[in-house]
Image 1 (cartoon, each protein chain N blue to C red):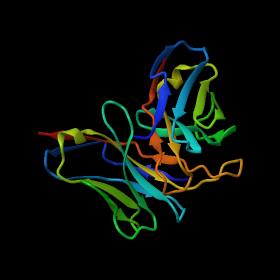
Image 2: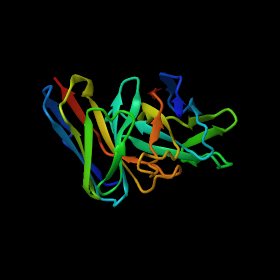
Image 3: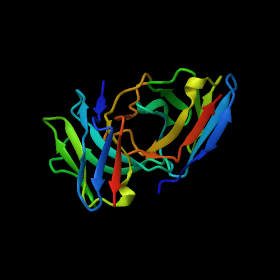
Image 4: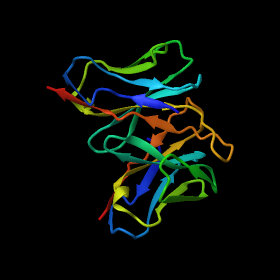
Length: 114
Length: 121
């Protein structure tokens, strides 16, 4: 199993509060991704990183920011949580961005915004 | 833009029988990868099988095979000899090599909406 952990695994927070989710990998992979999973939408890319301090937006990035100060850690921050950000968040890693490389996923974080 | 379509919200199969989960895709890229992931009720995403767009033979991994029909843009997952533990959500996904604003490719996965498979004893 790929060495990917996410913390916390479950979180309940109030609208308007900032929230930070952490993804940690032990594989030394260059590429890291944050997805959210919602019923009827599958998984959608929020942000990604292609190296330390190198990040870019995905398709649903509004209201989210990320940081990567070390190869092994990729942080996702909800700047001011809203109910629409209630979701399951998955971190993924990949050795390469090539089409033939699979992504390995962390266990997910279930976030509820009340 | 890439799109993955899974038209079967739910499928049922008897234990020990084979089942096919449908997946069609749309892309203008010539080079792409097709993936299937399994998500059991515990929630983790498990990589099952990969097919490259230039692969001439269908991919197989144990009881999983991918029926790749490039002209039809379909990549159906076949599970042979179903087991109770196969009950899960299955996602088809495609990876191309898009380029980000920073000029770097990032290879995101585009997912379908998933098919819930239930295996009956």
